[in-house]
Image 1: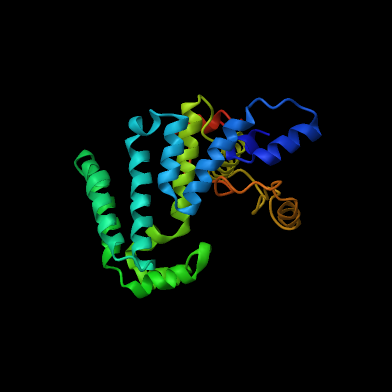
Image 2 (image 1 turned 120 degrees about the vertical axis):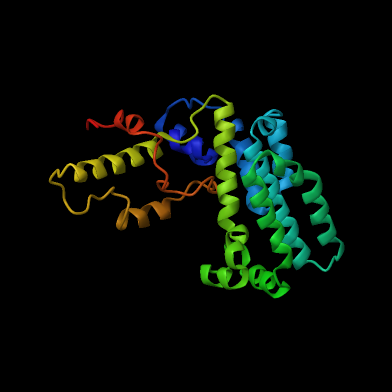
Length: 258
């Protein structure tokens, strides 16, 4: 239940609560608000996403400059994408004007903002043929090799994974602003388990060469058939690469002394 609520599967969470005969500890309407924001980002409609965020929490983007910048930069990328895939010649000027009015003021605040803005603006000199290839690939985007051939070092900016990353960051920021955990417990536990295994191997503890999490093979096929009750995915599944901030944070989930 914790995972379904945190990750944004309201239909599945409601069905689970009904079948398990338990009272959910969250208002499903709040989950739906996060899902609407996520879906807007996935569609590339960043203006709608920003407006929904401001309706939900008017102070969130004012307080989190990095998050606001990432949303605006993605909006710029989408505007540039539209300028190359549309027959409207005025869209290029609108993209440049958007960058000047909304993103340029961030450049003096942080050197990384300036670098990220410059990289996004560099998309304006990518040949139209490259954008045509990307558009013909559909929502899944071009293959990694094709994207690198067409966009070079800028490929990550046009990859659909950027939308997923921004949506994930927004979801976590909203949860934190509502005094909730940024991630479901299971994600912490998976990282803790991985950390504990690594530590045990470093201490030469006798362990099998491979310790399965029970998430592969037939179980994956079974899970994929079950689905999420009509919900679309809030974030990328599976454990993330980044670890927790310190061994002490992870040790509280294990019995291994650091």
